[in-house]
Length: 234
Image 1 (cartoon, rainbow, N blue to C red):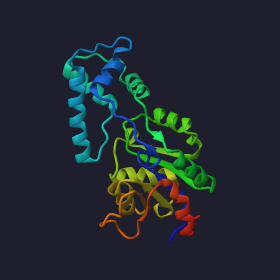
Image 2 (image 1 turned 45 degrees about the vertical axis):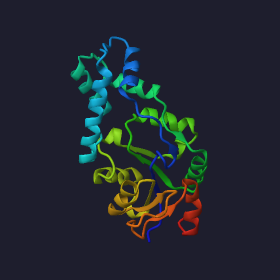
Image 3 (image 1 turned 180 degrees about the vertical axis):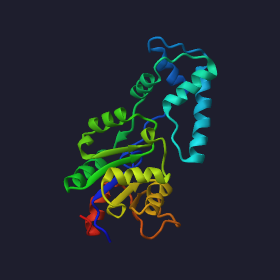
């Protein structure tokens, strides 16, 4: 079996406890604080409707709608005026807390990075890269990541094969040398395995019956260094 040279790591429920997603009321409140915006009373309902439709479309097509597009579509629905959707995007996700990194997971990540493994953050998120990098810096693990592959930047989400292609490119090595680690079987284990990567599922539940035998299972990310050492991969 090929030696592991890189780790591709999911974020929410793998390295961190997920943060909240902004609803229409929250977005409207942030927009009210921005200059030159016009936010009618109907904006929260319009945003929630547009977001729900986008989620359905994204699940069906394995895409990731741009948050700025959601803002534009919501504004069109209710007559809002948002002169700078990009600035509004940053403002919303600065106001809404990001995920909280698990200290045990952070310690394990530092150990793995210290062993010379390339580390790629590979996750589905609406948040902009600037916000996610700020979260990583605050947790003291930004230096551990050689690259970030985010659905919010790519416009596609796991298990879209294009997402995994981007992970392989970011890791800079063949897929057989990459270990993908995450908590969702279809997106973080089976999908990567189909793209030629190795995978480990993080779950506190029993091993899924349909999980291929080649995919490992651990109960918490903090167990990964020991798992790899036992397997002879470190």
